[in-house]
Length: 153
Image (cartoon, rainbow, N blue to C red; front, side, top):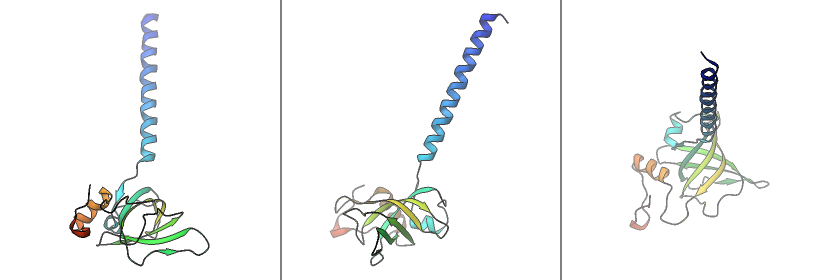
């Protein structure tokens, strides 16, 4: 092999190796940021991974919100009307958060099956429900319809 071909081979191999490293690092970074949605039924069945960031959504169970007197800890339950999951959140809840409303909580599921939330998202108007929550409630056949209207998806 002459020196010119050898040099071209090294350049091509270097480019292929560089692209492979870049693709690998990109996939690793994207894998770290993926958080899949799970309904309370899927969590109860054990389909949701433990100690991995997930999103869980459902309706806030009436009379389940318990606030701490001396800090920002809040414990509440969410349901898809088949199963219920406890959520623990340390922070200020959104203004639109209330019992009987659809929410999505993002966090990690601990070994006791409690979602340790780092973020809680509430609906933004009276007819909206997060699409994942609406789909989970439709699968359960428990989709609530306020005043005869359908939810926007």
